[in-house]
Image: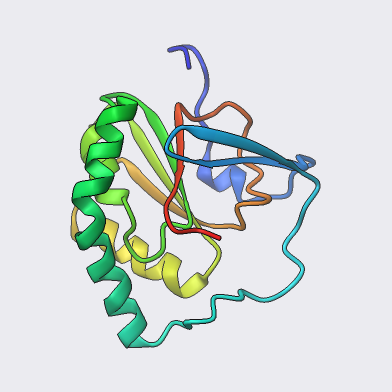
Length: 157
């Protein structure tokens, strides 16, 4: 992505769009989906009880070393624009924020409003000024095509 490419405005992004596609992927693998929309409530069968939230936060810490290794292999670096699909309450947001630095940007996408609130609190508590967490379904984000240098999804069905 070049220096002159424009970044998205999160406030403008939250509005309606004619876009019918989204980019998602895991560790550098990007796929394009056409015309799909979420037609049912969030099917996350483990739910959002406090015990499950604690498990997801522990999981983020337990997988951090392996995730960091993968990001090293991909070469995620300062200034990159990165999207994490299904970031949950924390995911890789912190790892990615540190890697892309002040000149980069991380966007977390999550379809659960409860998880979005938790992730936004994680971002605020850690003073990550280069991270946005947005409520959206990965199959239809309405984010501009080619807006990211890297897309990742960890443990997302």
